[in-house]
Image (cartoon, rainbow over all chains, first blue to last red):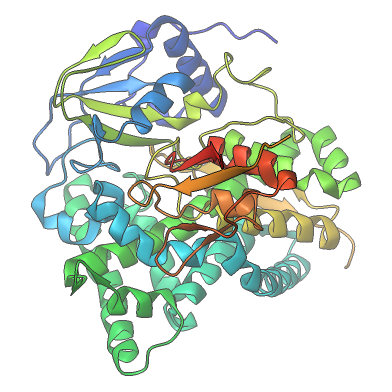
Length: 424
Length: 69
């Protein structure tokens, strides 16, 4: 299969219509950029509530993403990592978390929670992940059986699984899970009209979402101050950094980051993984027949899905990457989805191969201090989800086209009908 | 053959990603301080390959291997 690559002059990554294109067309555009214009410059999108910035460079090749990500002193996060525009001051309280900080402060804050996300600590959590998944699959089957044999995979499996796990780790009561889901959906909607129908209200809505989540945190923190537990919220309020506890703002933004990053990303990986296996049934047959492929299959799903599409860095001084000279203040957007399809690194990069090895993908970010905190957790959740689906719903099949999130930032799927036949 | 090696963690660079712990759980452990700790003074010969892999894959490049000398 040969794809004709589009003319690079026709590509505008700031046009939201681009992000509504089918995946194959977006991939072809990035292939063209990698080949013909690896440091393409784009005007920033017009936003109603933020002054338009100077524009940004799209970093699209694997080696260049690595060079930018691994030199945090030259390319910092402190001016913003998750927003192309510099964040308006109103939003900094809720969204100025460690993801948008530089060392040494970033490192000190991250270390408060890093142990909780290590393989040895997560060992204790595996049984919980399995129990949660069993229950979700049983409930999903009941939905299918009481209706037309289908259920929405996103609503019943890929969304609640990581949501319940992260809420449990943070100590968030079950009653608040829906609120956490709704508000983090809004924050990471990327402006998709299903979540934000009037872009003039975007600032208000996103601010409201931050306030709602901070409200959950405050209630919880109040309880934990009198009765600390082993959860992450207790760690956030208890730990001192440089002899001081974290400020209210730091706790709020940290809490919101964990809520959002802990559920949206793994959800996206699971949903895209199920769809990829539907498009490549021979890979599904192969994996089901050989569970020892789970480790490489999970990595390939993360490469293929690239749940978080990009992160931003800002040049702190004049610096060169891949032969291109950048100036201090330049904004660089590292497109992980593109690095993950770089044909110079991945043989048959456009082939979904669950046994791919080596697989040096940047689905969890490229080397550097901001490497995904939840990588080990996500790997476990994804392996459990697929292993259990294969066991309990071996005949699960996609029954309709996925409804894609129109976002440049998250490669999300909002809904995807799947069908199960036969009983467990 | 005296190929005994030591691993050193750079406490400034390490943010406790735990990649080393996943690669060589008998050699590394993230402590309560959120950074990696080497569990053995000298890397046993059977773990040298894993130690190298951990160092190569460390996202913050916080691990270095040196001959114990």
